Amino acid sequence: MATREATWNYRDRFTDDFARTYFRSFDDCVVSSIGVGTYLGDPTDEADEAYHEAIVEALESGINVVDTAINYRCQRSERVVGEAIGDAAVDREELLVATKGGFLPFDGSRPGNAGRYIKEEFIDSGLVDPDDLVSGQHCIAPGFLDTQLDWSLSNLGVDTIDLYYVHNPETQLQTNSREEVYDQLEAAFTRLEERAAAGDINHYGVATWDALRVRKDQGQHLALPDIVERARAASDAAGTTATHLRAIQLPFNVFMADAFTVESHETPEGEKSALWFANDAGLDVFTSASIMQGRLADEMPGEVEARLDGDTRAQRAINFARSAPGVTSSLVGMGSPDHVGENVAAGTHEPMGSQAFDTVFE
Ligand SMILES: NC(=O)c1ccc[n+]([C@@H]2O[C@H](COP(=O)([O-])OP(=O)(O)OC[C@H]3O[C@@H](n4cnc5c(N)ncnc54)[C@H](OP(=O)(O)O)[C@@H]3O)[C@@H](O)[C@H]2O)c1
Image (cartoon, rainbow, N blue to C red; front, top):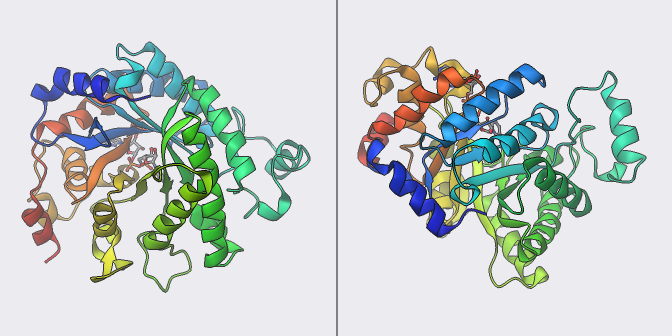
């Protein structure tokens, strides 16, 4: 598990290499404002080798946040993260290791007949109740998440997962009402509170694609106030002293800035953006798709680019994401070792100040 002492030691080793506010607080720990993501790429040995090299290099050069999910690359991403953590010249306690559960994972490769695989491995085996399965691939029932968490602990080779996300809960809205999904989340959170009390996870969160950044009238919307309320109820039900809900993850980049601009979360001061609400509620924000899955390395509106520090366009894109108010760390997928040095070096440049960030949207 990431500890205060070890993450501060990590920071002390690297802080002189980076600009102001590169390291940021996460609970009582400090983490890098750039994290390694592991979503994209094929489920192949070649991609595993490249990820391994990239993650080791990242961890050894100032990135102590690594993000994965059990379904990424058919569980290969989790497994390669675990190997890289073991092989890198860093202590496990120096690292924030985050993963997610919710999508039914394949095992090493995509089966020829995915539907049959899911039926045999998950339904017939009793791991998933067909009534809880949405879109043939998504389930957040507590019993299923329990199993998934156990698999993730094993894949990652760690005793404790620092941050465990319920993955894209808005998928459940395809067949369930919003109120039903909040009920499901409360049940999932209750189990995660219990797993936190048992020491298997340290915090949990929700990782989303649309839910938190779309307008309230859109079908995929989930409201942060309800999520926070359900986490408090879960903590009460599980008998934990305080909720372990700690973070949200959502896409944020130059082309997808809705988490800052769309005000869809109710507060006593009116409706506010996801970033505003999270900051106010003490939730850490991790941005996904921080360089829009590579596109921002090629193109960016000139007027935005001109305001950002960085030697390359990818660095400027990363610096946009990690400049947004309330963002703890911007995740960048790095399956190619060639990208690591450039991406880490984004942190040698100053992020935008909050006023400068605001003016981008005027
Ligand atoms: N709903 C969710 O929970 C969710 C959704 C999406 C993502 N995520 C998380 O967020 C992380 C980041 O998002 P993402 O990976 O989808 O997108 P991203 O970070 O915006 O982009 C990753 C892509 O950009 C390329 N890239 C990286 N550095 C580059 C550079 N310096 N120059 C040019 N291209 C570069 C990568 O190539 P290489 O791989 O070849 O290095 C990869 O193809 C994911 O890896 C995942 O951990 C979560």
